[in-house]
Image (cartoon, rainbow over all chains, first blue to last red; front, side):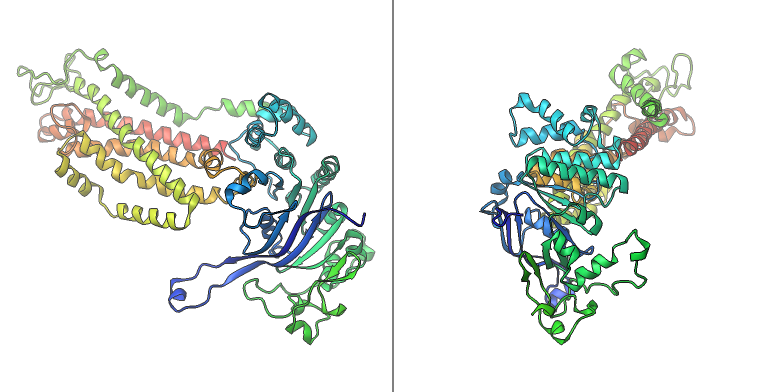
Length: 329
Length: 276
């Protein structure tokens, strides 16, 4: 790990709330608009050529965060600087040419492919729309990309329904890589697949990352998968990053109690290392009414008075390893 | 692979029967003179209300007109009414449904309120009002059916769009930076049209039926032009003495309607299999 690495994406104080539609009676009685605080003041740098994993429970805002940084959702406040360019406020039209720089692989390989479009047509459209190559080279480009993701050439003239889940995810990866993106967001790309297929897809992603010098934001709730693939790990809890560090640091020396519990609660194949008691109790608070103080305080075994009143800031504890917890004040 | 070939060979029976019936109706419509030598509008005072015979297959009516010829010649105008009254609402309704569902928000709210207004119109009352303005005839028939027909397509397509637009493949198309128009044309329309097409096939039946109903009431196709509904209407006074005037056009109307219904049924089965 070199010291001075180039930042591909800088995210500063990013906020994304989803307003909940009010009933007409609430509007009349001037009840304030409530919203789901999906992403709440997140600051994060993504370096070039790294695999950064974003982990957290379902509903903690991982996917919303990813969709906001590629402007699929409009952020409420904060800043997104992609490759030196501030894209936070760019209009739809200005955004169009740079959208291809960040692509996405989706969770569900069954709903992420247009069922009425043949694979070849889908790829052809991308190459032509973004002028990736001259029209006469399109066919050979399609051949290349199918080869890269390990699909046979006759895939071109087939519909998505003719493929298995793993193959479909390969098609999804081909779609994302066809436009030569700098940043690839993989939103739980293997959680819908069989274990044996998961390994294939993870290896494929790893290989492609090396080959194309890709930057990958890998979203997952599966810590074993993350351990295998990621260079750095960011742990998210209720719309906030609570810990960030290299994969080794996070797994061997977790600082935040939540990270610790997450790692302990992930299933272990070794029966001697299994623990009887559940590592964590209760559910995260509702992202609509977030209590003051540390968001994890209610479930935290180490919570003290200050945890219930004051929100801890993200601080660098050891070089390259940051954590938001009052235990390190 | 072998499994796939087997699947393709399995022909949808209701679709096949439907296509046979409708093709037969189309052949009648295209060249009616091939099937009968009689002029459907020729009055023959020598053979009024003649029962079915070798000469007049379906008998004659109170003006001595050959019912068989009238029924055959009706196919053209009835198919024209059925398809013509369905095709315009199909396109308008689908377009409104796509815009409403895809853009949502205020546009959706406005279009849906307009739709509600049209929902409130009883079809026959509206038709009679239009007849009062334009006079009875095929024009009034079309205008009234176009005005009331589109809303079903809008509701159907809009609900499909609401599902499809949140799917990950539409998201993927947006991530690729495609324009709204491209997303709609390539990702939305191919995935929402099947239910509208299926409905359209059965809508032809309803259009034909209400066209016949309008003509029966004397608001649609005017005498002496042969039209199944009009013939039935004309024959109702003679039902006790000459059943053949009303029965034969009725049978043709029902069979043609059945044909379109079967096509709609078969199409929906087929599209359901294909879409995964």
